[in-house]
Length: 608
Ligand code: ARG
Image 1 (tube, rainbow, N blue to C red):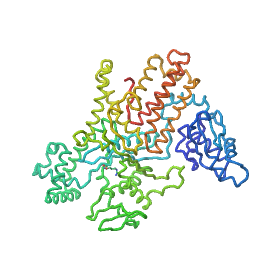
Image 2 (tube, protein in one colour):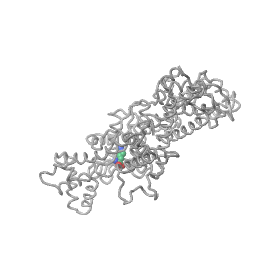
Image 3 (cartoon, helix red, strand yellow):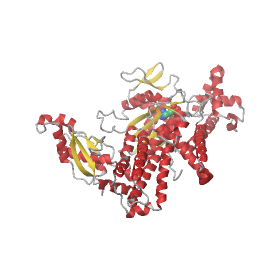
């Protein structure tokens, strides 16, 4: 019974925090209670932050200053500090708290009880990392990510979307919320008319549908050739456009050709997902096609659409460019599909949060789609209260910057051709394998484990190099940098974890036994610092979910490895009088690191 607080407390309208899972959220709940008791009329939501200076405390409540502005007319309080003191006095008893103090103009600082910390650290070994998951007020979340286009190139932008989207999905899954991982592949564009017509022209006749894989060969080469003819030959262009009409009206031959082309693309995508261990459910644009007319009718009925130059558009106040939802030729486009997909997800799939992961180049598109959905009454207006969570159902666009090459330009291979993602990933793995062979690991590990480890490190390095960035900035892709053994890389962190496992192995003790018989004692300063950092894991994940950016988790892991090194440099573990407690602390560190890796989609290794 570490905490008597329940999930219901977290859902109080006054609670700004998304969860009681994290220590920070529990502290916030305590201060929320204090504010309710001390200031029943105002009862503001608690503003709680980690202390920058550990001298003052571990967490602080920052409400006093803004609260003073509201209560000062009432005479009781002379200054913000007096408000702070009142908050401090109203704080409920809790086993979490060792002491509180007032600093500066009225910050209320709180120090965690060491005993409580020790208990919580031990408990996570007994009960598992799931007990540290943040709690989110959502039931079902759609994450729309990766989403390459059939027949076109799957490029590094799609790689970023795949890596970032997967990590966001993993973080939300960790909280226990149902996540629908959706691959919104572009499988319904006008490009299919051209591809099918080219196929029929080149390998036409009765056997057009047999052995298509062979006839198409490399789909990207095939795409380029058909595009060339489309641009150069007006007659071909005409026939391609007719082919689209035939496809969309369900002609079986065209339909079959389309299916085959999609299958070829799918195999290429799968090769990437399989390497990255990313699970996705394909729900391409074509899936939503049958629902488009009804959705457009709803928008028409609400009076949101205007015909402009023959096209159906939604105009927004104060914005020049409308959202075009039906082309002048009556055909549907990217926006028709996105409006329909959003409607489907909210109404048919009952999602209360929909997240779209694409490059920032699409942010205007999504802004318009979201605005249109608000006007249609599908989603609420944004709330004015910045401390509160956005009202549901909620939609977010998670944008990211470009991947650059060493030359500072868009990432390409030497031949300035597109980068094939499978080749890129294979190269990362190969380089790791070479590293391992050079370090003589293959002899110890054998071929199979080396192969496995090289994949984990190589793919992990590519992911980590991406995820550690602020997603909005462009980042420079460099194998040399991401595979460095020292510094903030996945390689370094995976070694750090393997070293912890080695320490535990060397002791010859069983953590399963120790966690039942021994306790954790945070006696040394470095033990305390490591312990506190470990306890912050939940709030870091919580914050990463709020910001929809996994880079905070990367930063946390890197700091954790440093904190662990400091601890290990000063505190002997094996064969010391404190061996049991310290081994348990090593084990918690390993658990937290593994969970962190899991959230980033990186596979941890027992040895390296
Ligand atoms: N296929 C698009 C592209 O490659 C991304 C789709 C993103 N998802 C969406 N619902 N629009 O740019």
